[in-house]
Image (cartoon, rainbow, N blue to C red; front, side, top):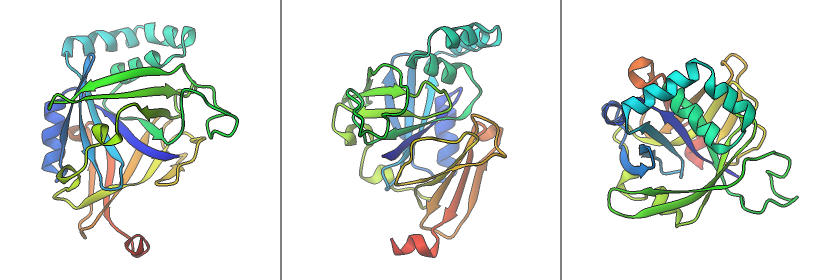
Length: 242
């Protein structure tokens, strides 16, 4: 199983794109999916960061208000489905809020699957309309435990969803996510990225490390970067051998 991407929810997508471009990331418009639109920071190791926002600031205000009065907490108790998870994204603060794994069949999980011991939400099909007119389709399932990952299975070729080419070349030299630290112990394992439980982080919080082919280091952090916690660092001598 592999880390597919990290979800970074923001209030305003246009602002987020500009801010991350100012840090030397190449940001690619993703398209629209129902009430949301997104953009991708895609890396050469087939991982990416998804910047996602609601189209409507009014809808964002309403959903956050429902969270404040406890309506979404009640829904979470009544229905542990994928929609509840997505409402958590839309109603919560800006920042890195979720992680997605890929590499297993989601429609018929067998005893040999790495997910066989987890309770998952029912599969839900999604599609996204890219700016170039291409339609991307995939299936999602989420762990019933909110702080565990959600999982993706592509219905269209993977490079429809994770584009290739120059979009993976970043002026700051970024090559890919190498480590994710989480405030929660993540149960499934992945082979492409280190997932580390960091008890100093609040439950639900996470930070990401991205390796760069350049010598410069940077820390993308703070309110101006949507409360993200992203460390950009040069490849180690061990990584340079691989």
